[in-house]
Every structure is written in C-alpha cells, then in structure tokens.
Length: 148
Ligand SMILES: Nc1c(NC[C@H](O)[C@H](O)[C@H](O)CO)[nH]c(=O)[nH]c1=O
Ligand SMILES: CC(=O)[C@@H](O)COP(=O)(O)O
Image (cartoon, rainbow, N blue to C red; front, top):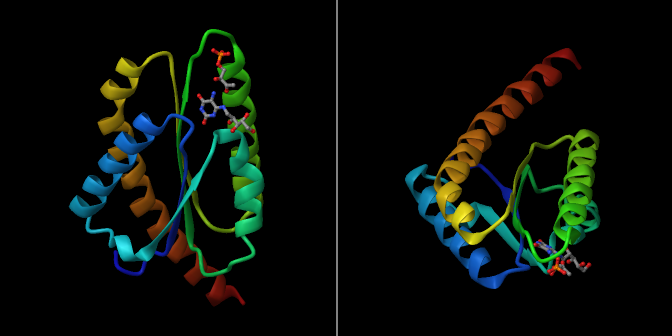
C-alpha cells in the first residue's frame, strides 16, 4: 500500500482522546503496512471546522484519499448533538462532491468509556475501508481511462 497518499485530518477538541485516537491509528497503520510517510496530517480545533478546511485542501490535487478523524463527546447540554449532526451532514455532503474517497471516523460518544470500548473496532473497520476503497478507486479510475 505504499502508493496511498492520504490526508489524515483530525479534530482535537479533547486533547487526551485525540492523542489516544492518533496513537491507535499509527499502531494499526503499521499492522496494515500503510506507510506513514504517505500521509499528511492536519490537526484542527473541533469537528465543525472539518468541512471548510477540507474544501480548501481539495485545491491540492496530490491527495488521493481523505481520512476524517475526531471525537464528539457529550457535555452537559445538547450542544454535542448539534456539533455531531452538522459535522456529519457537511462531511457527507462533501464526500458526494469530491472524486476521491473520504473515510469518516468521527466518533460521537456519551462518555470516555464508550470511546475506549469502541476505538479498536472502529479503527480496524476504517483502515479496512481505506484499503478497500483505495483499491476500488484505482479500479474505477482505470475503467474511466478505458472509456475515455
Ligand atoms: N464539543 C465538541 C466540539 N465542539 C467544537 C466545535 O467543533 C468547534 O470547533 C467550535 O465550536 C469552534 O468553531 N468539537 C468536537 O470535535 N468535539 C466535541 O465534543
Ligand atoms: C462548546 C462545546 O463544544 C462543548 O464543550 C459544550 O459542552 P456543554 O454541553 O457541557 O456546554
């Protein structure tokens, strides 16, 4: 998987959880032989910033997939629901309008325990999707070239 050139964009609203997520991602990237050198990392303050930052970054056409990572955690009010709904809506909308794969691992949780219980499964699933989708994308591109 050395040819994967991905943008890994992570919202670090909660620094501790963000570090745990990144640590786990790196560990699994190694297991799946995704070369870290082929990834560009970008930390953003919170999930609401995803859509406009990704939109700006799409001007750089060397990126061939985007991996969105972040944690939205319940606070004392329903604010987290708004952040979660809006972020998901715009990330998903964006993914329809771009022609590179976008894998979304934005986790919405009620508490830290939920995060710790799900992190491994969610990451494995997303990395598997990256491999699957980037292969699928290669096939699609190849097929498009045959048509043109
Ligand atoms: N509460 C969470 C946020 N909120 C912050 C917003 O995403 C945004 O950065 C801020 O309102 C400034 O525009 N972000 C998360 O990623 N996770 C949360 O739990
Ligand atoms: C401002 C936020 O994103 C978040 O901290 C809100 O938390 P709370 O629901 O406890 O006000």
